[in-house]
Length: 155
Image (cartoon, rainbow, N blue to C red; front, side):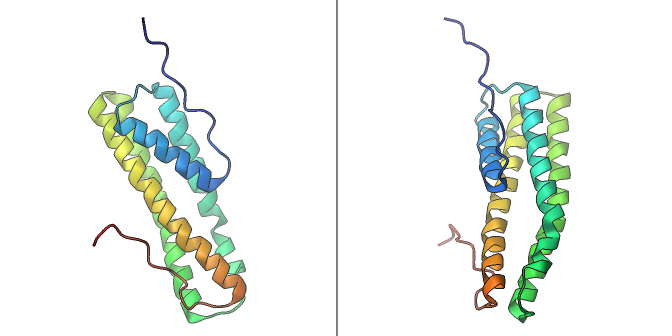
């Protein structure tokens, strides 16, 4: 029995959080050395890049949502905007890893791309938890815990 063509990755979700989860699964497949066609990998990186760019471009929403100039909310907003600035660096780094795979497509390079993709997806998940909490608190005008601590595996 000969193996068929590798399964494609499906369509990337349009909703940002779903896209991040989808890209994490794609990245995990790279880490596990699943046989993904290089054009599919490129399409995944491009879709993730487009989603991150659109998310960064919506940065102005952080300013419009606040109902008060609470110091906690203002501080949290600065942190979230700084995260948005760092996203551009993360996307450039992701493409750097992809270009290495494109030049020298072997398992180790694919795993490195996948590991970086997983790190980027995890950072975005944590960012989104903080961002969604900020939006919730900004609408109510309360900041007692504007940026909740992210759960850690360190115990």
